[in-house]
Length: 434
Image (cartoon, rainbow, N blue to C red):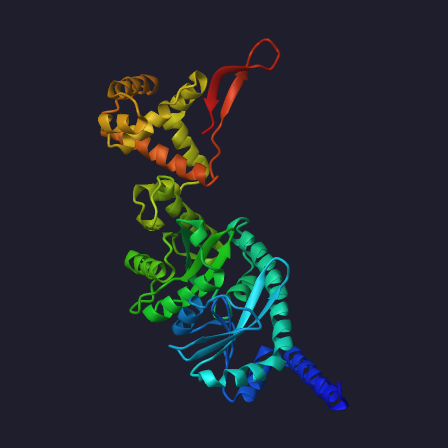
């Protein structure tokens, strides 16, 4: 190697470390401006999830860029992808922390194919600084995820909210004096779940396109949430209780399914002030679980539209448990003490609209067996199952109990007596605590 070649290598190294220092001191914006000078035009720095890092900072990229990223093939850092239809060049810089790989793309729009070598040469000195930036982003992301986990637990589990932390997490335009509702989206197939950044980007674009109030997306415990800003009437500034409308949510659901080819079920809680946001979260969970425990998928359900069930769910768990126990306690105790399953027969018959033949088909038994079991249920409960009032009462108790049990808000169980032998052998005489 000649002295000139050694000097050339040294100059290249100096340039790379110079750009690294510029990124550390001035951030990605300073590095992006320097890259723009080197390329002769402004690049777009965007991650694989469609989040823009330059020239805008951590904002969802435009829809056409999102579509371009969705169709990107796999390629490495030493390669490039050129979209002929869009005249868009993509160069990649990636970094892995052992558990996750993060990719940052340098996108050049309206770039001619013959100028690809010039772009690659201009970007090359920036790779070290961009790699370091991604590495820092991964570390920051880890810390943010841990902090967000604690933050969401405070809101939804411990029901304690620090307003300063809330503003810090959801952004400076989040107004803690406003009222908000929680939207919960659940994927029919977990394998179709999109990345959190894509969920963020979609909600931002949908809100902008439909001129709705701001939505603050979150991902917690595998659940996709959005904190929706309450809407107010223009004439008297009163909160619109019937918001967001089912029509708007269905439109959001349809657009999401079309874009990501993934079916989602949506539940929306009521509108509350920030300190009571956990109530809206629980209501959104109930709205979703109300249907999913029946095997239904791809629906939209507002808690406010659950009718009489809304009024039942609004009571505290102790009162709901007492209602379920009063209606079904004797039947559950009989099932437990006699190894029977009359509860399933009653549930199936009610779901079948008291159609004995249909219930028998679903239970895979003869219709006379269903009739016999119903007579036994009437005998145990001391009721007439042809009475509409009784039918409604049992159906409500079963539905409410199933939903709260599925959400771990109600813990079914039995209190049993021990045999008098002193050996501690259970004696089949129990009392339900459901």
